Image 1: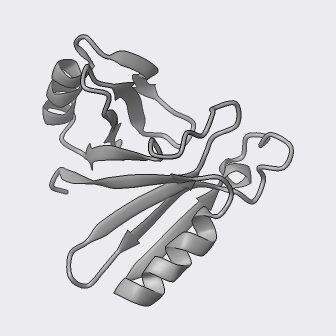
Image 2 (image 1 turned 30 degrees about the vertical axis):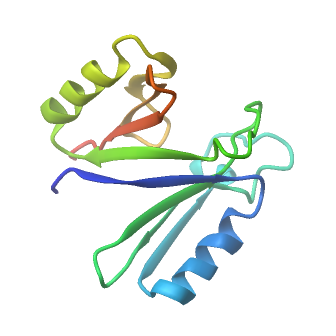
Length: 137
């Protein structure tokens, strides 16, 4: 899998409806994962909210989105991030190293409950970046 760069949108409970709307507009395949769908106990009220959704369109567009995680404040205008993802661990760790230098790391780059290595930081210019390394299995 080639490394991809795409927008990652954050919603306050309407990620499913938004992604379904974007699918109607753009076409493509939509995958939705809820907070309650990963085997771990979801926080109350978050069982059916979207932890990660991805729309891949026939035109080659990729759009990812989620409902704001529990305990994180939603700030309109700061409801997007840039996502770097793929299975080239060396390449992605290199990007992470450079992006996280001088940044505010909100999620250290480490193995997550869904099985991938993931990290999130806000760079020195105020842009939030997500890096996800798909574990080969």
